[in-house]
Length: 120
Image 1 (cartoon, helix red, strand yellow):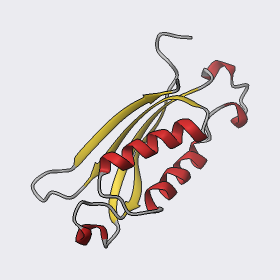
Image 2 (tube, helix red, strand yellow):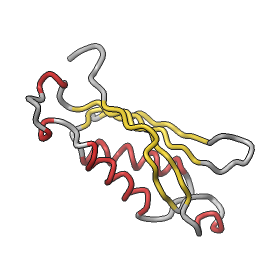
Image 3 (cartoon, one colour):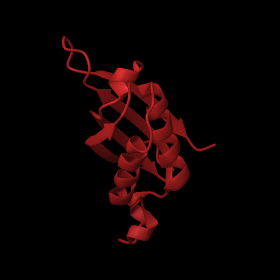
Image 4 (cartoon, one colour):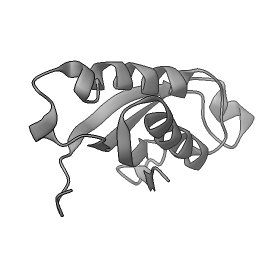
């Protein structure tokens, strides 16, 4: 394995989620965005130009969007952890870094939370 792993990046994927601590905030779906840094199980040099050997990022992004929309949550920390777990559990990913952005404060560009998880 290389010291610098091969990486797939997905930037600013648009999500919709009912999220927030006050019940009133969770009533209406909010726009969130997420950045995903995925380290696939196989190096790019061993893929043989076959999608089955890598991470299907189209399927992964659709799954992440569905996960965000499936139920209300209070904390973005909960959702970011669930997204990381989903990437590791359901796709050929050995390491993932997820940064989730919420646009809730009028005097800030965004609030974000980030996690990094690896297969054990």
